[in-house]
Length: 150
Image 1: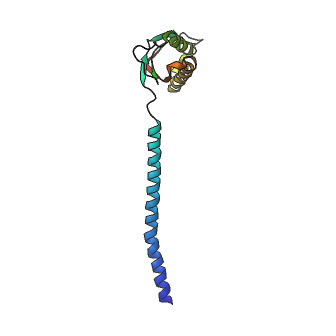
Image 2: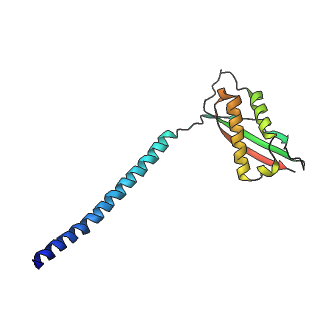
Image 3: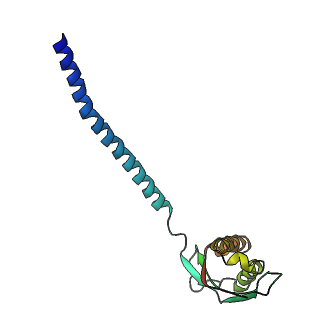
């Protein structure tokens, strides 16, 4: 009996030595396959939303700083979801510029000096343009130049 117990104990140990690495490899393979599948799904869903850009002339305006005089010079391009084709009605540039100026005029120099302030400004501009000129299909705001003078 003791000999039989040794055999069964050693065969169980042999099975475990074989099973544990196999199960581990299978688990790693499943995890890798699942995470790779998620990346493929994300890539499939992230088709380029921007199909063309609309360049706007540079904006120069006073900022809303009460305690000091500050000016902003900013170049903006708009990323549009629709391509603009020849023969189509031109975009409403006056309405676009008026919307952008309305948002920019509320900005303060101290806020715009930091990256978070520029990001918030982009979000505010995007929201305002999507509300006021939805037919344009603005998806992104690109700053092509950004200068604050005090």
